[in-house]
Image (cartoon, rainbow over all chains, first blue to last red; front, side):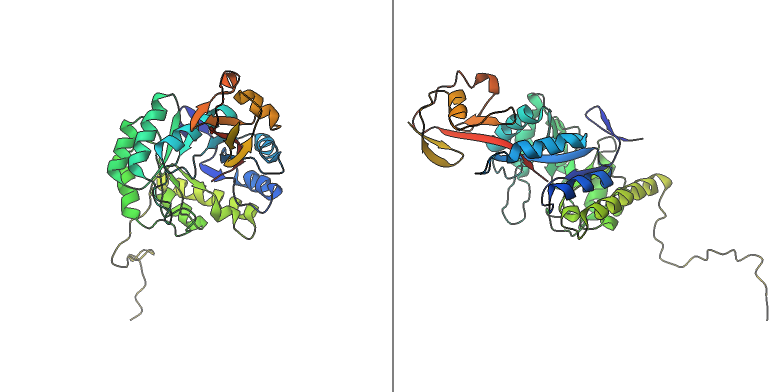
Length: 258
Length: 65
């Protein structure tokens, strides 16, 4: 079974950011090896030389995947809502990765503004993918505001720390068994992605860990395998840790030599 | 009139947002616009009259995480 978000079933549980790659060619290769069905994009002012936006948009359309525009860099509800509306027109999608940033150093979401912006955009027909913390109450408010997907961080954006509060992620999963949960931000390596998926998460959104790898395309492939492995492991039933050793080889029938 | 376009103050002849885009050489359907922080859809650009000091944002697709 694939991951279904807002009525669209995706062929991959790995969502990929398009920023920070060494070149457009490397980005294209990473998208291919990741097998992703969704890439994130943004809106910015045109560079002095012109044509940057058109070239990038043309490249993204060649990927043949869904596009998830973000509101990165927005610090107020107003900025985020205006950016989302602008993105809807250019990218021709109701999907928006909603970011309302509350802190310059940690890029922590302003969860109060996030809930307010999510409500406004949901009422205006957007399918909101909120970049949020792992806070349970905020998650409830986002769902009340109209979000049918949650994207909690597992560590600050670009920090590569991996899940720093597994209990909080586990609690979110337990409280929202039917809401697609996608960890967005903070992953550094494939084992982090596998660990999150083993908790029963529905997907992973990555950017820096792939784009800044020595070989982004190879790393994208490695993450794809980790996401699949973690997902399969969750459904297979993961053995819980035990305090004592338990022999794996049968004890009964063992020879006695003394 | 003086406008602030993408953060740069400039002198423009254009009276409407559509005319401003043409004046600045923005062609194509990969631009989104806002005036004074309010989104202006493409089909409304002709009707939007600009005033001295207006802040115009013209945005285009870019890499994102």
